Length: 113
Image (cartoon, rainbow, N blue to C red; front, side, top):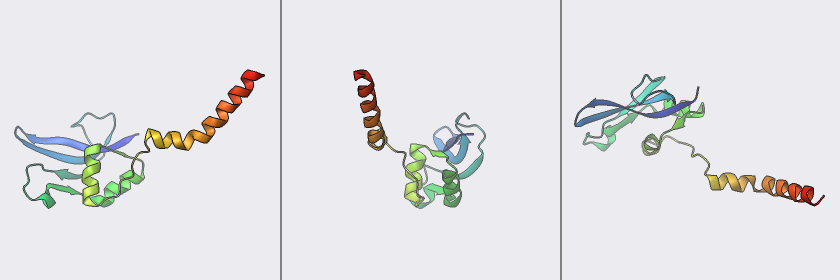
């Protein structure tokens, strides 16, 4: 079951409130979570109380392979939770360069023969 850590909208009109939770990726935005980890209140004046999360549980789910939405990633990094970054396409291509070169050489040799 692929999981992601993302926000779920709660609250009312002109008073947004979000809960941070671990969700199955196929779950709708406000659907049932696997586990709630904290909350985010954008209207809160005190910046330290604006985002509250259980960092230990977040790190646990990340270690189990859960993805993290971009918004939650920035909040977790501000809260001091280590979030691994996904490798970029450029990094993956650089890693695969030797394998690609061998494959191209093999195709060129097969073409000549």
